Length: 237
Ligand code: HEM
Image 1: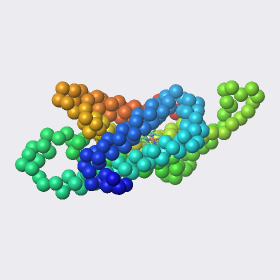
Image 2: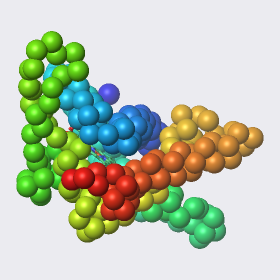
Image 3: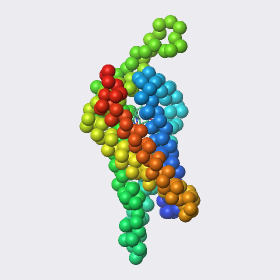
Image 4: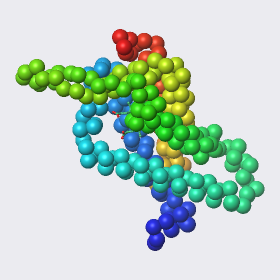
């Protein structure tokens, strides 16, 4: 089979969607857990960020896998959508449409909005082009230092706090993360369905777990801008 001939096979396309989707979902779960370290204070979050940056080539392998997964996920989803639009409508089409959940009917649109949010997010926190004035180095003393060595690292804590103190930026994140949640809700269950876990007796449980996980991720992430706006985190900055 040629490099892109998978595009001609619907089943293969759905498997590509499920595998690339699983990689992206896994990243969001790990990233959410990492972001929650903000509640343990400046030193914990900055040490975690410095540790990630110190991974060097491993970090780049993770980034390449993520970028390739995102590209394949987007190309395949657009191809499946065009296929769906081109398909002959059946007499049950209207009924099925009414039965389908809101999040499942809007996957392509929430997906495109997630893409816009991630592009903004990368420009904000990774490339630091939208608010370069929030980018500071931190001078710190390592815990295990024998003499009074002072090292420099990136102050990710200060950058996040200064960013979210702006209500407009916080609002963009809160809305963006809620859209990510809608996308994840359907994505997780549909991934299990594609991988064959669609039997009648346990699929409702998978649906509930998928919605539950999406809600937990949304609550954890939006709690960060909300806590900063309320002055519960980073009050001294
Ligand atoms: C309140 C919500 C979020 C916060 C506070 C947050 C925080 C951050 C920060 C601080 C960085 C830069 C880390 C560093 O350079 O040390 C980052 C990078 C990133 N975030 Fe988020 N994030 C949030 C939500 C999300 C969501 C929902 C997604 C995906 C849908 C996402 C995807 C990414 C990606 C892909 C990177 C680049 C990682 C890399 O440099 O390799 N983030 N985030």
